[in-house]
Image (cartoon, rainbow, N blue to C red; front, top):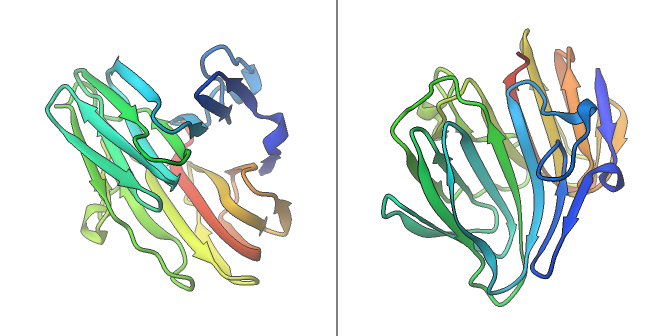
Length: 235
């Protein structure tokens, strides 16, 4: 099953500093047909104005992944962690037993990012934060950024307390990459830049693509494209 979710159909929120689109129910946006996808609960497409951001607020028992598409976001939390994650890089926060954090754009330009929440398989873990540069070149196919499956950390992935994995790829015009989706797994894919075909079906820039019971997923770039894919349990 392939379900293309056009960008213009996503939930929306806007105020003086945040322009957000919600792939799944979030905040005041509620759609019972889009109440998460397997263990994937949230995928927000956020644009944060310069000098603004998310003031300190709490979380618990959630794996929160931030993929920065443009600019940078500066993280600061109650554990004393602080650092900037820049375009093309990723950060992971384990909310665990509880953490308070802020995410601010201290840059001179808007910051654009994907914020992804995944239900953990392990609850009440020690909270933590990790960030890493992940250089990706055209022609490398899907590269793992974060994962909690067996063997993911050995491949250089940031750790997750969830049976899930986050991948990204930068594709040249006409370049193809494939992904094998295991039994009992679901995947959600977004072209952060450009247009793609997923098993022959077209997805435009920032559309969502929900994949279930598609053992082999072939992704082809129509023009240059950058994609982010999350593989989760379909529970």
